[in-house]
Image 1 (cartoon, helix red, strand yellow):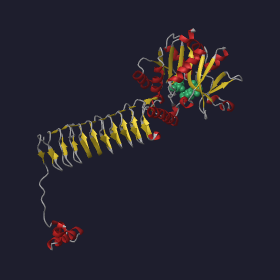
Image 2 (cartoon, protein in one colour):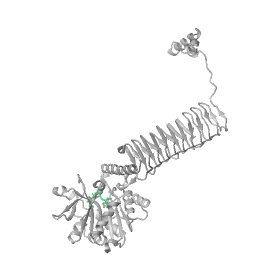
Image 3 (cartoon, protein in one colour):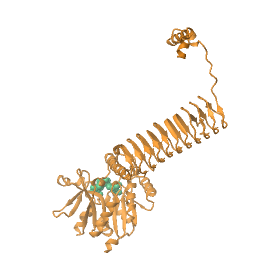
Image 4 (cartoon, helix red, strand yellow):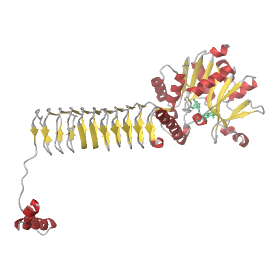
Length: 489
Ligand code: UD1
Ligand code: CA
């Protein structure tokens, strides 16, 4: 093995640019795809290469970007770029941040999020096998507009890279682009960068100029051509951001399909990179499975469902539902048209049904809230059935209070539980009850006044109306005995 084979690897991630073309308050490299910022994808891929050092170069919105680096890649050093613009200056300062690192330096752009570690591994391997000074990743694109073009001489060796803005019409016809990802020998890189000027259309210190300097110095330049050109996509504007998100999602959906998940409509199914799904999950169309959501075997999710940071148990069914930070137990049934907010815990075999909103509430095993309800700050035991239209009045204008419902409670339709209030085990409540006081175990709670019928009120008070006519017809039919006959029949 030559010395080059064993050289240590450092990674420099370029994340200092403003990202003007995004037209955004959020720094470009923090825009998310697949539930993770662009920069996060690049840091994640970098980490899989187990480099000796990682430096991330920041400048625009540096505190926010540095914060993300600290969260996602705490071992990385954050290096500040100065007022000299350009990728060359960024790498020069990144190298300084690695002190006197000697070995190979992999440079990654934070706005090129889809490259996979196998591609980068192969690039590093090519660099070492060829004992190159510079190895760049290129891709052949049907539309190379906007990228730097790789210019080769008559014998096919790389001569230089020309940026779109500096290219002649002839050069712009070249469809081999620079992916913005390179491996350099640290010493050569340091030497060449000190000679890079700013005499170009953008007045920037271009990293790409290192290629022509290395060539003039007679050093070897190697190229790795990206096996999947789409993975070289650089995100500069919102259209490219959406395209990157789509490509990443297609990759994620396919990964889960091959792991045994049925995804009926990949085009309308969005799965974040941190979500996990077990075999025999079925995902119906128009469904978003986001952040760290986990879905156990046999569950059916969708259609028209968004889950953010949720946990779904085995064989649960979740239809037309919006849920965040909720736990849905095994064999539970949710939706259609349910809204589960943070802190909802639905135990095994439970149900949160149609037009039901829940928040910060535990619903016990086999318990059901089937229709038209708001359940907030509530603990519900096992085997409970709440009638249609149950409302927990948890807020008294000053503070939130809890409702505690025991095991095997059955409530009548259209109840209001005015918290703080407790319903004992096995208790029942009448239809329309407003429960303001605790209900002992086994009691029937009634709060509605007994019904009183005022006979003849409509005919006396609304004469001449259709209602009065109908009442009169019913009365005469009854008086002539027809009504009685009809009832008997
Ligand atoms: C760059 C390449 C281009 C290549 C393309 C691939 C140069 C001069 N051009 O162009 O050949 O085809 O990427 O996507 O390198 N950055 C800094 N500091 C700066 C400027 C940029 O850290 O002063 C960072 C950006 O945050 C970004 C990356 O470097 O992550 C690339 O910068 P960008 O301005 O997008 O370069 P491109 O014009 O896309
Ligand atoms: Ca770019």
